[in-house]
Length: 393
Image (tube, rainbow, N blue to C red):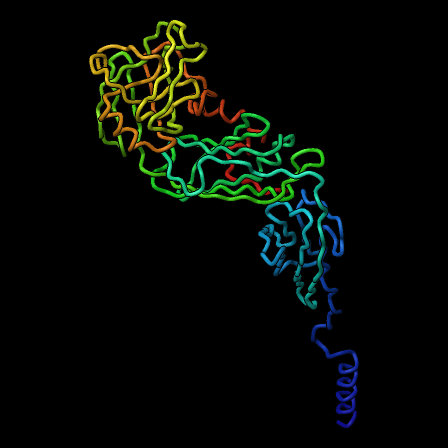
């Protein structure tokens, strides 16, 4: 009996020495995760076009805070929660502060804090003009035109930086018209009565050799009621619909079609601007030449760049009966005044019945191009062309 007790005591001593019989062996402590920031902290001349990236090596990111000029910098975390990247490029000649936290089970958290500065741009570009104007209310066919103050070489990078957001989701694409102008057109007319915001995330975008965006730019506009007009030059009639209901029928007279110049163009036009009055002078003719005219025309709504308007004219003998104009569409003065007052820029005006087709680049004739053809003018790969905004990666 005494020997049995001594054996049990000895057994317990052995168990205590080795850490306990039947219990888990204590795990060695885990190494904390490593946070890697690119460009690195304390960089003085970081490139702007690649943005900023934060990675967690051996763990996951739980928080990333990046600021510039006191404002938070937007970014996104990947599905693995190991990589965070800014949504857009970085501002030139700006200081960025970064605070990133990474964790790993069984290890202390790692908090990395630091700052870096981007290089200054030798040459810069920016948005010079837009249509619509900020705060403008427009028609359902309105395109978005963005003009830059410098020719753009790297069109894909600039196009990726252009973001269009609408209350009602929309499919649209940008098309480069010139080296300084890019135009956004929706696949179908805008849904009426909604706000649209356009943001050009240009700061730090490389637009060409040594050329970088100077600053971001944003503006909003409103799509108003949906008003469309249909003009048949053969029946000499114009029908105006608003939100799907006919609101006015008008007798009109169109181009006399004795020359190409005097032939009204057929196709989908957009109202571009208006004036009361507008001075109209016969193109390519001087005073005394046959066909010369120099007139002030009331309540004129422009629908192309080739001199076409819907305007007032007191020739009711022709309206509804024959085409006698120099290419414009004219209506009775009181009806033209009504159309003038009710028109917004971007209202579609579809004309049929002539053998002269509106060119897609005549004014805002962009709806003349089929959708797939329109998208071919994008600088982005086909899979990106319909995107409202592609992060700058």
